[in-house]
Amino acid sequence: MSAVLPTYARAPIAFERGEGARLFTADGEAYLDFAGGIAVSLLGHAHPGLIKALTDQAAKVWHVSNVFQIPGQERLAQRLCEASFADRAFFTNSGAEAMECAIKTARKYHAVGGHPERYRLITFEGAFHGRTLATIAAGGQAKYIEGFGPKVEGFDQVTALDIDAVKAAIGPETAGILIEPVQGEGGVRVVPDAFLRALRELCDDEGLLLICDEIQCGMGRTGKLFAHEWAGVTPDIMAVAKGIGGGFPLGACLATEEAARGMTAGTHGSTYGGNPLAMAVGNAVLDHVLVPGFLEHVQEISLRFKQGLAALVDGHPDIFRGLRGRGLLLGLECVVPNTEVVAAARNAHLLLVGAGDNVVRLLPPLNITAEDVSAALEALEQAAIALEANSARSA
Image (cartoon, rainbow, N blue to C red; front, side, top):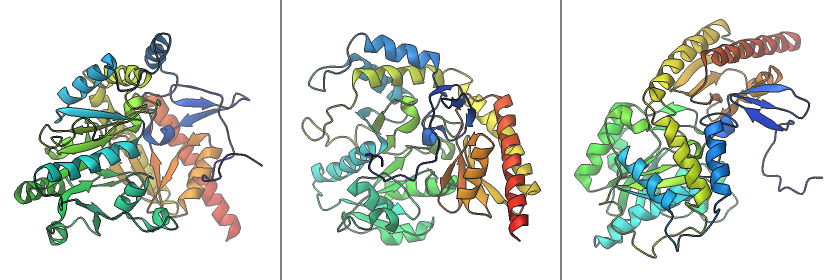
């Protein structure tokens, strides 16, 4: 019996090493990784540039805490701000921590502005913002909240991407609106650009803060550095994580100078957040993502992948019903249970991950090659044929 707390339904497989878009078992079996550690392995496995950055820093200093200046942190913050809407950055170890910082930043903004009663955030059905007590309350999904006592106060969820419903939810205690431009865990659901623009206008009119959760859809995953850029809008606060560290635990809360005005010395902190190891890797990730042509590659390879996936859906209507997503955050809508699709793909040596609304996510490295996309499509074809055969046998 394992001593590990059994909070995960783990697949019966373990990996010894990785290289590029592939993972290898101890027996040497290769699996094409289109799960990416759930959108984390932005540049694949064992990327030489990330290895060098980490090992070079590991030979110098690992940890000093935030009571001292950390040059790598200053550099990464400056680069992220220059590449985005933001003026300030706070570094964390995870996406949930980045969201906690975003929530606190929004509340503090109104408190220092003389309106401490404005602490509530409007959120959306199907959202996933993390596993802390506050972030499960923000997501509002019963399966994550149940059994953990009273739900943390301060979140008002609307059930549809309807601007009138959002307006109706605004009250004297509303501080802002929190949204994922693309819901990942919720089923790879892309928020329409027009709706994001309407939210931005509404926030401006009502004196609210627009907060984007780009933990999964940010850092180039959709073909723009951040997914909200497709709508031509900017948030006031944003949480990012996952791909920003390429596999090393790292997150960040980005904000404008105005939105961050209440976050002064002593208002927030993290012992490990922004440590020299994480900063070295984060800067190395940006060294690649910000290279001219990198995001264009994501857009181009995504188009090729979508075309192949659309043909797959057309060819296997008893297994798949549709395709969703943007860039290399893609989802196949399933007819059969998505767990069966994940298992069949794994049997074909392709790794996928499930999502809500009976969807499977496809999250390859952003530097994926056309050859590996073709290999993934072949594996999905094999998986679909196997599922159809199983269905025929049980009929």
